[in-house]
Image (cartoon, rainbow, N blue to C red):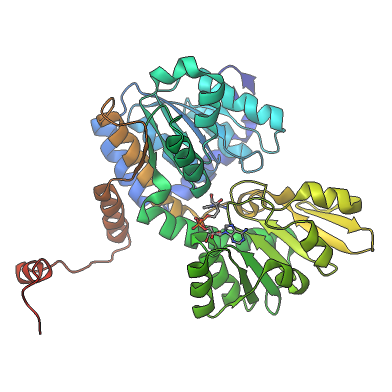
Length: 421
Ligand SMILES: NC(=O)c1ccc[n+]([C@@H]2O[C@H](COP(=O)([O-])OP(=O)(O)OC[C@H]3O[C@@H](n4cnc5c(N)ncnc54)[C@H](O)[C@@H]3O)[C@@H](O)[C@H]2O)c1
């Protein structure tokens, strides 16, 4: 279907998409509670929202929550390979959301879809990687005055937006959803940790036990991935540029070394740094025949595919998400999902249970933004502490976990300095 109101692969996929949306909803109780409140209170009544997110069943549940709050929404993909076409069809046909996303879309279509979402003339942007903010600032400056603010989902987007704020070019306030404890400690660590392994296994069906599994970056994502790879019996090697993170990896029981050394040993390499060319020409030259290379960082810039292309004498598709690059010496290197987010390109992204928290933060931050329209400065804000605490409280409640509360005596003790032993 291609109209001004939508560009999705095939509307006939809508019933399948609705089943996926309902399935994800079963694991998203916090978002469901927020949705019920939004239905009554309509905190986003009449607000035009443009969202550039991975078009998955979990995102669909966020869109339905915003819609329940009264928002008028356009949605485009934040990655050409992460769209679920059935979910896109269901949102476009049954829920009145303008969806512009087709799995596997080329670069031109990807940006045409971002422009289409911006044609919606949003008052709020919701990004995963800062593409909406960046295109608005570059191509549509005349529209910026209409925007009250935006939210950003991922580490890489927050880095880009902070750079814009520091240079004084950010022209509206952003809430960095990624910085909420209930986002990065769970989504990045447990969600990406599990789904990256899932993507690698679905793409290759290799056994992880006994493999040398090299992880570049020991941030939130790297930590989650390392512990899960270890759980599968892999021999995990970590590379880092930050001494504290490297030390943490050592004390967590992993081998830490330079990538130039790890390159010679690894069977599987995964980049999760948010950086560029972390795997580069010299590393490809040092790698073993048959090595598998994947990325789960936001952009497909962590593996220098251009350099690999130059070095290759031939490239062929050997499985749906696996390309084999043959080098001059006959060695074969395997790139998964064209170096794009492996957990979304070859698997289904994060399980709904963690996206429940990330997207509860998104929904509550959108409400916060609408409530404080016109009063926030043009900078990047952390998620308000009360929102973070509320998401954790609701999640625990939905899991049937009760925790203690401080007694008056304990409150007094913890806020005083006079008492010692
Ligand atoms: N696949 C997904 O669904 C998903 C989910 C969440 C985050 N992300 C992305 O994953 C990336 C990492 O996120 P994070 O939250 O772990 O970030 P983080 O900032 O916590 O960690 C990144 C780590 O990489 C290290 N690093 C930077 N350059 C390096 C290099 N050249 N070699 C080795 N290490 C290097 C940094 O020192 C840091 O410790 C980001 O791009 C983020 O947007 C992806």
